[in-house]
Image (cartoon, rainbow, N blue to C red):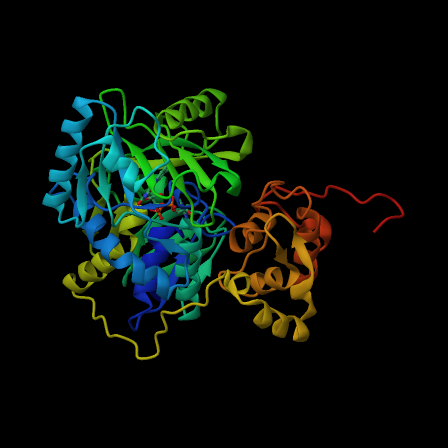
Length: 479
Ligand SMILES: Cc1cc2nc3c(=O)[nH]c(=O)nc-3n(C[C@H](O)[C@H](O)[C@H](O)COP(=O)(O)OP(=O)(O)OC[C@H]3O[C@@H](n4cnc5c(N)ncnc54)[C@H](O)[C@@H]3O)c2cc1C
């Protein structure tokens, strides 16, 4: 019997699970995929929004502003890269100037701090010299920040596991039945756990999970957003996140540096019906490139590394659906943007809801919230690296030449919670395969390391779990 079963290991499930392990509670996390951070958390803009976008009075507005306040310390504690680079919403005409004033007023009503209107092109250029020719005004949010969303999620879940939570991967929840003390949560392939409280953090499928306990008060629809990621050589085009002023023609796209030094462009917004369709389209990519060129000067798209898409979990209510549905069941559903920014505040709010529902939350004295950064080795001084290499020579054996990731770092990732079991899992934890060649050279080596460390046959190693095998047969006479 667990006290808490969290369904979904995205950035929200991770934050909630970690928060729960601060108290004397037995926590289990149920995730249908073979790794954590496989939903919207893996593919989004990675912005910690300052809080001027959401409508005042909504949960989104309150939790965004609180989340943005908490995020810097939260990221530091979890050893996750975070950069308060600031953001600009750029305008091109008098109508945009009016919209920017409205956004500023909305931000102030939400309690967002350090917002400034830049009324002339010169003022904008003084803050961000990279903007394109037509830009004449901007809203500057000094507290806007960037973060790595999947690294955050892995650190949250890893921290929860380090503090006693159990992570059950490949657990596709398909039934939730009332028991005498709580709920029995069952998977499609016959596994089950029992918990006093179930917390639904299932992203785009959170309406389906809520319906399993009879809550059909909302639906969640997928809204696809496509992106283009450019090489680090383009990462210095801008030093702030540059949004476009929303207009009747749409919200526009953003151009932003990432915490790893790349340039990210996107997303568009397309309502689709398939909750698993995160493919990109030539049309969508062309559209975001065109808009990005209007905002930021001189982007060299020949330096594109990859394109990808994420699915927003758009709730029919227009706001986050967070609350106690019935005794023993809490929804954290329809968490679209600014969900990433709000994650630590949502976790805090869930604890308040549980306390309000009469659950005794006794803080644990032995809770440890800190994590060593996953990228710590790369940031050491040469002398410190050499000391480690003397003892563990595998740190000198470079596997990914684009990102300069060593075998030692890959082995360490395999041994760190939440443990990866496939090539993409290694990629998200170490950046091996994230560079220009996108794993063309290092994937076979990573596969061999995974097979050796996890005691698998090389033919069993997958790209991203399930049936995504990469080696289909052995050539006769060769190993
Ligand atoms: C294009 C785009 C851009 C965005 N940009 C930003 C941004 O810049 N800033 C910001 O703050 N927010 C942004 N967001 C929103 C942010 O990404 C989400 O709010 C956040 O990732 C939601 O996290 P989650 O844990 O609720 O969902 P997810 O990350 O989708 O996680 C849900 C998890 O539940 C699992 N699951 C589903 N069904 C089941 C089941 N039956 N059994 C077990 N597990 C199940 C899934 O596999 C998944 O791992 C953006 C989103 C998108 C798509």
